[in-house]
Every structure is written in C-alpha cells, then in structure tokens.
Image (spheres, helix red, strand yellow):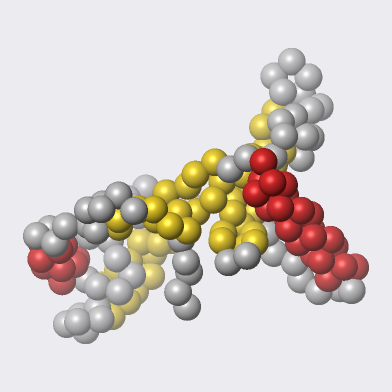
Length: 155
C-alpha cells in the first residue's frame, strides 16, 4: 500500500506531496519536513560536513546478556499484567516464517528494545524458541578517534 500526504515545507512553506510508504518512499528527496527543492539544497550543504559519529549494534554475551534477557522477561510480565487489566499493549512483530516441509509450523521473529542500567539492548527472539535469544547493545563510535560508548537517547 502506498501512502501520500500533503505537507507544507518547513522552510519555503510550499505545499508538496510526501510519500510515507510504498515504492519510492526511500528516495533521498522524499522528506516529511522539507519539499524536494529545499531538501536538495540541505543535502548539498551537508555533503561538505563529515559524519563524526556512527551508531551500531554490538553482540553481547555472559552476565551482561543475562541481565538484558532478565529485563526483557520483566517487560513481558509487565505487559501481560497490563493486557489482563484491559490496557492496550503495543509491540512490534515481524512477518511469520513458514516451514516448507510442515506448513503447520509458523514462527515469528520479534525484536524488543529494553534498557538496563542506562544502556539500550535489542533482544531478538523466536516464537517457537528455535534459537536462543540474541542480544545486541546499541553503541556509538567516534569516527575520528575510534572511541566507543553506549548509545544514549536524547529526548
């Protein structure tokens, strides 16, 4: 499904069409805040400024992995309590996978984001527990110095 919406440019205030989903939504000039003309100027100006920090994920093991899995379990318990109380619980679920030999076996892979001691972790699990949970820590790297630190969400 393709979604389009009319927007006013945040700079020149012209009315333009932003494509939120569907083929073409990832085009460089397709932006919800700026029209294509202004976005082109912004991108050409930013070309001359080097990227200083990159965000990446790093797989974790041992006690740190176990702490993240425990926090994920606590999150599931908390959500189950909310659902039982009639509250709306929202989570991401990825497309199901079907076993081609036995069409009755359906598994979904899901990723949850949990925070433990100020560090964000991504936990990947399967509904049928075909693999143990994968745990990755969200990190940042200074591209000039190589220094690495946990990614911090600034609100």
